[in-house]
Length: 412
Image 1: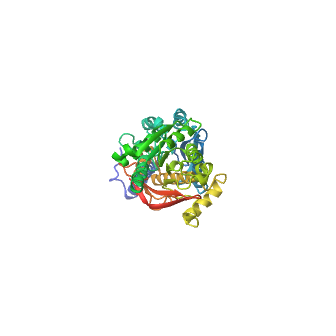
Image 2: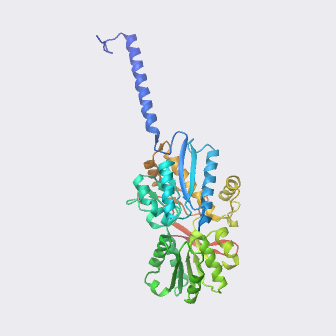
Image 3: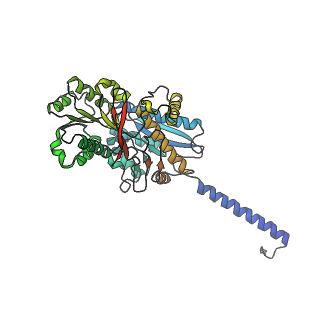
């Protein structure tokens, strides 16, 4: 006959109570540990796998340095003990700026390498090619390296989030500046014939409003596979335009600046921020040919003496010399890789031991953070209904040596 706990002798009762309490506490501890640590593929007690896609080869291989800078930042984190004690395995693959290759590499990272997150894949058409796949798989397509507006739509694509300012916002900033400084401008537009170019142009036209019909006197496109844009530049000059909006990636931006000088065309030039790099664009074009070029930035320019001596720059320089010594310290594309990697670090740290993909997106959608190398007055800020982390920019003008800021920080 089984004796109840109540009717047992005092000593026996204490032993039974102690055993029961120990079992209950042990069970509670197990449940607590399980509740505290939750993992999806790509995460464990010791590791976080991060996937990345960038063109290390092909027509825009200048962007490959972004991946190398990000790799250098994660190497620094690992040397310091990782993120919450977990080492980062950073798998960065080349897609040669070919959307079909992007699809192939994304599938490899998700299905074979089983990464927790796909971080910073570069290119508008390229992210578009994998967006539905990533959302169907419920794998974060996080902090994509494109300013296309479509990558900030949490209702339709809750697993995709941008990072940099949108192209439409940037296009509006240039249009607003033209309207305020040169309201009767005759504008020629050169744009890459893809979603990148179209998104930029949409914001530009919206800000010009009804005046767009009279102000834009010429418009030309190029394909990313074209060897040069010489003929387009000759035609744009022939339009009589006195203002030139160059919606171009680095290779073609450099060609456009140089060709304008070669043919004696001296319009006021506006250049998309994706090509603001001095080393990748201005030097190949010839700095003397780029004097007066206007662009916009949301990052501190590492080539600008105004930042030297600041803690933010000196920390960046120290990191760079140790973890990416083969790179170009003055290339602002490296600041992009460094700063976006820092933003991902913040998300993963805040996620703690709940390294599920759903929790990572939840944290990313409730973020307020100022990466040290962002331009003062600009921050990363999101909400569950706002997947546009950076929404402000600073106008800059090239003076023959470096870009100088002017005016106020602007936003959409």
